[in-house]
Length: 66
Image (cartoon, rainbow, N blue to C red; front, side, top):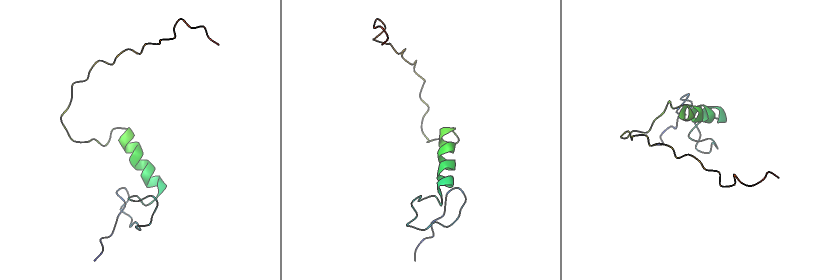
């Protein structure tokens, strides 16, 4: 007995040879990526205290532009 694979976004059946597996299409794959980038999905874990971001230093400040 083989389990039926379904797209996590639209629940459509997905063939095992589909290049977008586990998604059914590039569209569903991109929708999922967008949700990750927008913070809709999160990985469970303990919250960390945010550290101060170091100020980027440009080491070439004395160099003249080309």
